[in-house]
Amino acid sequence: MAIDISETIEEIVKNKKITYMDAILEYTNEIDGEIEGVAKMLNKSIKDKVEAEAQSLNMMKQEPKLPI
Image (tube, rainbow, N blue to C red; front, top):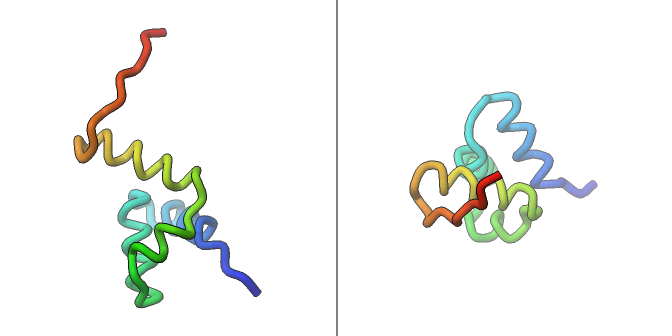
């Protein structure tokens, strides 16, 4: 039975009400794995959410947004 890591991360975020970055770190610690290995297995949706979190925390350069 294959484990969908992205789905597991979504469940951790939902159940523990933590950020995606924290959920990924928690999952990595639970499985005693490497963050780089887990990051490679995440789907684009999770990666986009992590990027949005990082931008909101000024950890990444924000992309300009067009006015609506």
